[in-house]
Length: 546
Image (cartoon, rainbow, N blue to C red; front, top):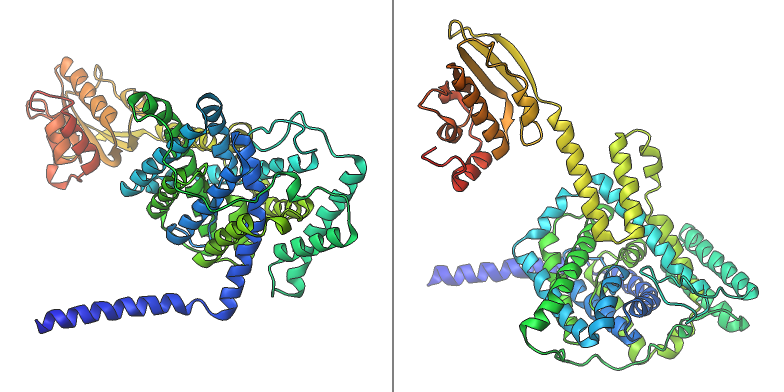
């Protein structure tokens, strides 16, 4: 009993120490930095959420509620403190077809199902597979997303309501602002960018993006300049989001409608979130959290679907604003969500007076800071296929969407890797020192589906000696195709009445490959290739006791 009491006390003490360590981070200076960073992010979230709501074909408040709810939940339980989530264009372009064909209630149901799928991905730890994304794909993703962010700002140079937004929020058929307004807006954008660039050299008391927005807004309001403001996009005034069960029939027909959209949205959302997680992690020197981020994104979207939001995922632009403004903890993301809700409830009149030029200037600085400019330099030094992947992923991200771009980049990189390894299969032929009259083939390079043809061409069963030994010490048997190639080679030699022996294969491979016990040599020194061997035992690919 005493031991149990002591153990419980020790556990409470450890928890107390952990909580104290967490709270010790929040010094007055840190709290101020985090809150100001959150305020800056919230100001940049407003026009983005409104624009992407228009892209999806829903009311602005649907996008704003999504930005608030998704941002709030992911700030509390997300895998990377300091990362910002909300309504995004990558998801909006998928949603527009669903809303147009079936209505907004089906969108809410889809967002709920999307959240469930993302939670399942987190529970089964599927987020770890993001490590399979090669670095050239990451560079292409960053560059493509920087271009997409830039293109999304171009709609602010057009007359509101003069065109239909595309996937990047741009108005292809929109009217450009008059020359006088365009000139004023460009000057204000330049001033905002100059403040963001120069202020940190003088002081870091206030985040430079926030200072840029405040100064430019003061100039516009004080001088009464004629330039587009947030209120020109739409009114952001509203109430608290209310619980609402999506008004769709509970049937297999409904599921057949929403499931394909939910799968696509869940995949896009997780890919963008996990890549952003890695990018923010590189800047803040943090690792891990992929599975936790999947659960957080899923929980956020599950909740959002029941409270009238369009769903969302991580936002690289706002995340960069937060990190560059000093946001490093969950407080900054939490502050951004709360500020956004305050804007909706009580501050809409003042927020709608903020000039779009100031927010565009902030986003242009994000573009400059996000784009991997060093990729131009390294592309002259890296393999040409890696350079091609960078350009390809960048182009597909801009032309299509992030998920397709990443999938294409991973496939091309994987095929390139397979092709390069397929060419590495080689053989060194010599006479055996232990078996008189036998020939030894020492294999070098991995044996897998891509190298099996080259492997088969290395042998000449018709002209070889009666006993041939294949040594796999410097090789690796990878997959079923490799085992099948070895089995086929044994059959060829058997057809000429010759004996083929294998050296340095795993015991499990012996069981799969043996033909009347003739293939085993030096098994006591053989390595154990668990993955390849176990796979073929489970599938029983050779059957018949092999």
